[in-house]
Image (cartoon, rainbow, N blue to C red; front, side):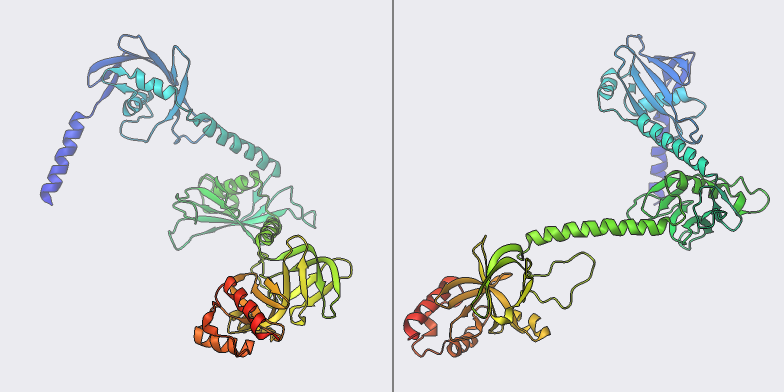
Length: 483
């Protein structure tokens, strides 16, 4: 371990000995005491020349008015001949950066990016940079400042104040009592997690509108520390500056400049407190209801359910009734985390036009859809499938409307629309259908024997698991067993 530490120290010493040092002496740019170019001008605009002065660029330092002094400026690099320009930021505050020697700091930055080398300006790399996509630093930094200025103007119109209890007042307060100018509350808290000061801002209903973190705040979904930042109840983040200069002689909330900065930032950005929390929740509920409705309508379109289709019903008396019909073979969620416990899929057919009517599957009615030519019949089935023994056992009715896949003189192959691979046979002499799939052969043989009641029918000669096989079963049953 000791040898590793000595080796590391040795490498650091070598690095320091060979680190390139820049000097600017009477306009000469010297790199390790070798003159490699020239610099003219003074902050904020410098002109940098090659050694033979055949190529030059300007480096202009730019900053945002009224921005905190700790914020670094950025550099606009411009070609003297073509006028092309682009922007770059100082990477960090290394020991090469000096707020008192911006000229040298600019050269160090260019050197670090390979725009300046031991041979002076690297024209090829600079032109590549100038011809690349704009960094857009000015737009970003100035745009942010413009937003801050606008927010300050708005906040000014509210004439905000805070009393020692943390009550926030504004001349724009709209309360039932016109003399009541309260719009919300602010308080200081100290979380157990990191011990840093936090401020919380509530509206008049004590709904938490925003939380301000002094240092190292963290919230879900945001991968950076929150330092002097506000997080609003709708997940917006704003900068609000810390300032402890308002309480030189003991703390008072009314003199807390940080608290006022927080409130001004909130109000200036549209968080006017009062009853904003409730309004937000109501608006969010409306928006969520709209989203849920859209999802519901889309789910309806993609479902196996039948909505508003013209067709007809053959009722218990054999009468044909035409109209527009609706039936739900599966429940569609309406997005409110609730379920209709009384809903049993596939049991009720609704006529939705003229004389409204409801038809129960247990009544044995048949209905058909004009557009698709599909027909369905209501009946109960036996044979051990969960559709008959599970869901419908809850309301003591194991019937449903089944889709007719094949029909010949009352002989049918059926399936529930959601489970078309679970096949059913139906013969005229039986009131119920019989499931033939998802049943073991020994049990199925007994079920079929009891259901068909035909001594000449040989179970082993048939396939009861496919539509084609069941059609063959019914054809042979018709020719051999029906007299």
